[in-house]
Image 1 (cartoon, rainbow, N blue to C red):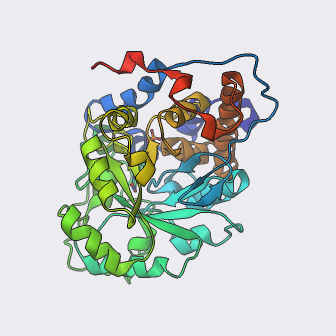
Image 2 (image 1 turned 90 degrees about the horizontal axis):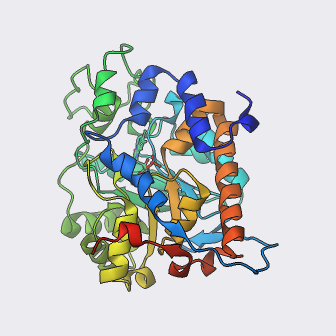
Length: 382
Ligand code: FNR
C-alpha cells in the first residue's frame, strides 16, 4: 500500500491484516482469555483528559530524552516481540533500521526470528538496543546467550520479562494452530531455524506438534524465577544493567527499586494483555506508584507499554511519570504493512502526533510534562 495514505496506527493494522498470513495475524493479534486487558490497555488512555495551556509560545518542540543515560530522539521504544519475520522478511533488522531513522530504542526479543548479531549488524553510532531474556529451564542456554551479548556493544541492558512464566490462554492463536504444518520461523537465538542441527535443547522434550505459536515459543521457559535467586544468578553472568519487565503492582515496583543499582528500570506491562487477562494496564500501576511510593521515580526509571495507539497516549504516560513508552504490535503491523518503511511510518506518525500534542498543550520539552497537564478523575476510583 501507499504508506503515506495510512494516517494512523489503525490504518496500518488494517493494511497489515490484509497482507500477512492468517497464522501470523492470529499470533500478533491474540491476547489472554477475553482480551479485556488488551482492550483496557488502550481505552484507559482515552479516559484521561488533557489540560492544555494557551498563550504559550510553541514554535519549538523537542521530543528527545534518554533511557538509562543513553540519548534517544523520541520517548518511544519498540518492545521485545517475537517472530517479526512472520510479518515480513525485513524482520527485526527492519525494525532496527526504522529505529535508527527516528532515533528510537529497540528491545530485541529472546524469541526474535533473527539473531541479535544480525539485528544490530547495521546499527548506527549511538543507536540503543536492549536484549530481552526468557530464562530457560536449562540455565546453561541462557548463560550462553548472555555471554553472546557481551560481544555486542550496541546492547546496553538486559530486559528480564517476568509477567509470563507460563503463556496466557490465547484462543485466537490456538485456533490457528493447524494452519500450515510448521512454524515458518523459529527463535533464532535459541538455536537457529527449524532445520538447524546445532540446537542444544536436547534435554527438553520435543513439544507436541499442534500448538499455537505462543505456546510453542514458551516451550522450555523457566517458571521458577524468584527475587532471591534469579537476580544474583544474572549478576554472575552479565555486567549490563537489568530492566524488569512485566511489573503490575506498586508492591513489585517497590521491590524492584530495592535492587538498584543492578536493576535500573522497570517496565510496567501486562504483556499487551497476552498473559493474565484482567491484569491492570500500566496506567493503573503508574497511579498506584504515585500514590503509595512515588520515591520509586527517583530511584529507577519507569517505562510502560501496552495499548499505545496515539501520540496523546505517549504524552499522557509521560505526564504520569513514565520515562518512555513501548510499542509491541504496532511495530509488527508496521512491518506487515510495508517492511522497514512500514515500521518507519509507524514511528513517523507517533512522533508527529506527540509533537502536535505537546504543542497544543503548551509544552516545549518532555521534561516539562507532568500531572498539571492531565485530568485522571475518570480512572481513579479511590
Ligand atoms: C509480545 N511481547 C513480548 N514480550 C517479551 O518480553 N518477549 C517477547 O518475546 C514478546 N513477544 C511478543 C510477541 C507479540 C506478537 C506481541 C504482540 C507481544 C509483549 C510486548 O513486549 C509488549 O509488552 C506488548 O506488545 C505491548 O502491548 P502492545 O503495544 O502490543 O499493545
